[in-house]
Amino acid sequence: MAKGFVETDTLCRQIVQDVRNGVFSPVYLLMGDEPYYVDMVCDAVLEHCLDESERDFNQTVCYGADVDADAVITAARRYPMFAERQLVVVKEAQMMKSLEELAIYCQNPLESTVLVIAMHGASADKRKSLYKTVSKMGVVVDSQTLRDFEMPKWISMFYRTKGLNIAPDAAALLAEHAGTDMNKIAIETEKMLKNLLEGVTEVSAADIEKNVGISRQFSIFELTKELSMKNSAKALRIAAYLGSSAKFAMPMAVSALFTHFNRILKYGALLMKTNRPTGEQKSKVLGVNPYFFSEYDTAVRNYPLPKCMTVISLLREYDYKGKGGDSGEATPAELMVELTARILNV
Image (cartoon, rainbow, N blue to C red; front, side, top):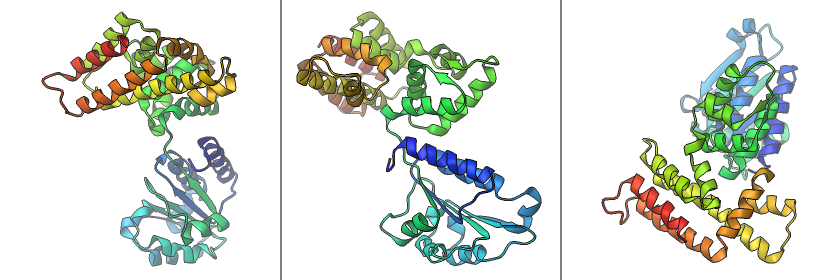
């Protein structure tokens, strides 16, 4: 992300707190590939900007495909009726052909109008006038999709905002289940909160399994662990289960395995430079919670650099096969088991 997800989260939570206290910016530009923070801020402004009785005359919500800049500017330049302010929200603003022309209004926005420009799955061009003007006169939220390895840390941070501590293995399990979909994690968390006993503040992997419906025993997260330990029997059993799942996709499985072995490769390279890396050095290279350091200490012994390179070469081969290349009559389950067996035999 441009600022990093911690900074974006802090910014958005401050905006939400401000609007709850009645403090508003004249213009909000909400953009980015990840809709979670865009929706968070937009929903908060919609909820707190006007009282229920004021919305009929002072709230305008439109969609980018249905309006042009002139219509939005005309609405924004109206004065509120029997209220302190009026609210104009443009959703799916990336669909506006004349979006950049909103910069004309944003250069001198009315103090009595709150304008929200919400883009989903898209961003304003940072070289152009709209972005630059709102950056000076209002608030810009740039909500970019996190990378896979950043999700456990984001989940831990998200749970702290709920007054909960989530165990590292539980965060990793939930990240594997939800991928980089923050809204999915938020929804699953709300469901889980309804089932947690009152007063519970520690969330374990067992809680995630029970309340989110994930089987830790049979997951990519568990498979990488067993491969690290070279526990052949369990790794092959998990591989067979995963490959037979209705939702199984070979490219996604290979991607997760590549992330794991790429970390081992980087860790091996670090150990070639220093025999005793610090915890900070390990965190920087591995990008995982210190809870998992011991697993990688074992993995790097089982897969020294030459073996790790061989595994990565195998992953490239099976990524190709999983996408239909030279796989013959092999089923996804057979390919997954075959790949796992070959990794264990490296």
